[in-house]
Every structure is written in C-alpha cells, then in structure tokens.
Image (tube, rainbow, N blue to C red):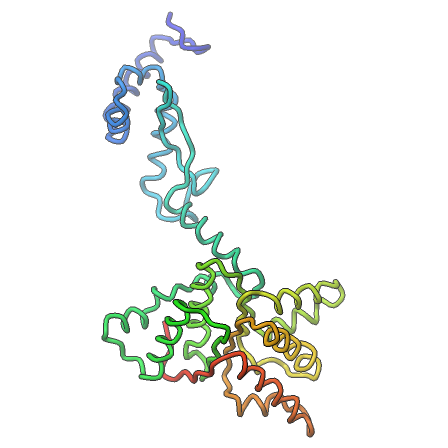
Amino acid sequence: MKKVGDFMITPEISNMKKESLLSLSQEKHIQNFFKDNHIDTSLMLDYWVELLDYNDDYKMCMNCSSLEHCPKDNPGMRKKLAYYDNEIIIELESCSFGKLWEKKRLLLEKFVITNVNDELLLTDMKNLDIIKNIKNHYSSASPNTSRTIEHILSYIDTPTERGLFLHGEMRCGKTTLLAGLMNALAKQGKEIGFIHFPTYLIDLKASFSTGDNEYAMERLMKVDYLLLDGIGEENVTPWSRDEILLTILSYRLLNHLPTFFTSMYGYKELNKVYTIRKGDEIRANTITSKMKALSNEIMLDGGRIR
C-alpha cells in the first residue's frame, strides 16, 4: 500500500485521487499556472492537497459579487499559487473587493474628526452626475451652479488658505459638493475634519461629564481642513456662539487654516440667527466677519445635485 506523508492511500482513495487530479488538470487557471512557471504537470501528484485547497478557494471567488456576500472566514482575501525553489506554495492576497475596502479604510482614516456617515465621506466628485454632465458639455445646471463646481474643481487642483462658504435652500447639494471636495483633499493626504455642527454641539454638551470635550475642540481647531456643515441651524445660545463657534473661527483665522461652511442662510440671515437678544448685533457680526475672512461666499441655486 502506498503512503504519502502520514496518509495511507487505500485503493478506493487512490481512485478518488486520480479522478481529482484529472479534474484539477483540466482547470484552465491551474493549467496556466503550470504553463507560466514552466512546471512539469507530474508535480500535481505531490501537491494535490495544495491544488485542491487553492481550487476550492478559486471557485468561491468566481461568483462573488461583494465583500458583504463573501462566504470565507477571511473576507476580502484570496489564495494564489506561487512557485519558489521548485516548490508550489499557497499565498494569501487581497481580492479586488478587499483592495477596494482597504483603499476606503485608508481614505477614511484621513477624516480624523467627523460625525457624519462613511457614505458621505466617500463622496467622489468624479462620480457625481452633474460633474460628468458638465465635463461632457450637456449639463442642465444653472450658470451659477456650474461656476460653483468649476470653483471647487479649481480648489482641488490648487488649494488655498481661504475655504468656501456654500449656502442655499435645503437639499440643493451644498453638503454633497463640499463632501466631494473634502474627499479629494483627503486623497491628497490632508487630514480632514467634517462636522455637522448642530449635532456636534449636542454631542459636545453631552461629553462634559467625560472630560473629552477639550480634546475634541482642540482637534477641531487644529485639523488641516475643516468643514462645518449646517452653520446657523444649531440651537444658538451664548455658549454655542461665543465659547464654541467663535473660539473655533478665531483660532483657525489666526493660524491660516482653511475652513469651509454650508448653511441654509446667507450672511444677512446669519446675523439675525446669531443675534439672540438686543445688543448682540456686534457678537453676531463678529461671527460672520470671521467667516468672511476665512472663506469665499457662494450662493448655490437650482435643483438637487447627485
């Protein structure tokens, strides 16, 4: 009776092995591996177990549609055959879905402080329909919207100290466009803060008991590029206006750090929003004056941007 390693080969198993080897030898990807590496097919006998393992893994990958549906214990990884020093070995590598996941993970790490969902952070400018249409010269966007997009694309190519302030009606695309801009800057290796400001204030107040608020504020003030989304839509109090928003704006202005804003309101409306009581006009004007110094104002009109 033949013996392979510590495995006893009975006649029944021997026949099964022959059939298995025959089947493996007919697999195109295995044929290509032996051909590309100039390996004699007789070696299949010695590496039957490895080839079976590899082939089973290969079959699992054939009909895979996404990382979420991967049936493996290590999703996003696949086995591949390698030939070194006259030996066939199995190595692990990322599959196409695994590589995409890793690319997204590394990109998301650049958003060092954020309270918005990953889908928004992963907004890619070139995948927005309006960007594709403008580049193909058949966009129905208004002239103002087209100029806004051109301004954003220009900023991606040549970032400056002054950020952008986009304002307009709800769901007109303010956040989507600046999310695409932040995504592009993150791809350039910049560290990004992307904050929905009303939610941030709620979370900040809730964090007082933990002592984390000072650290969060410091990161917000010092991050390379900061987007404050929904300015003026928060529950405005003297604390939120003077101790939080004004502190952030003052620090970033003093240190020439690019800052971006979105709002439903223009400067005239924001002055009213930040005037809580009679006599607050100067404080409100201080907020909008610093925003003006930090960013270029753009009013966004037209329909929803996708």
